Length: 141
Image 1: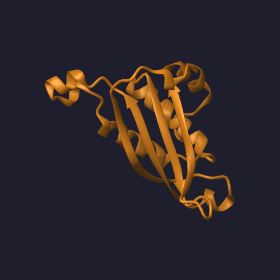
Image 2: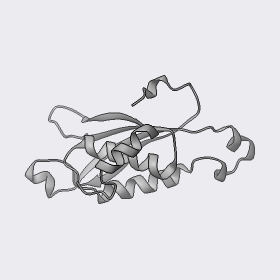
Image 3: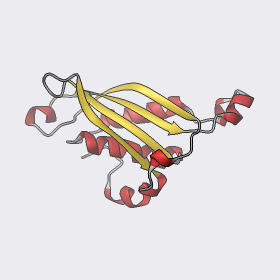
């Protein structure tokens, strides 16, 4: 994967604090009880044209991204936050056509004495073909 951090500076759309309930975890009780996960997502979007037209059709509709991600996460049953974050990133790349995505996913209260624990991942379109063949986008795990 090319380093996303080396991307030129540019416009971004972000979604912070998307919250969903899902089955996540590998301990027996975690396989029976829905838990909260919180996602932050960052996407590259050239906002110049939309700024001139003031039309949502000329930008990435972040409401549609949020709705799709929240529905996917709610239906998922992965064991690892790493797998859920990776699969969410691939879903966004495949369905919304952005060049790269940064996903931060955390499980509040997953570790005693810690507010939350999670992962931050970055994926690009270059990751999509090989990864899509190995990772289910249907939400199962």
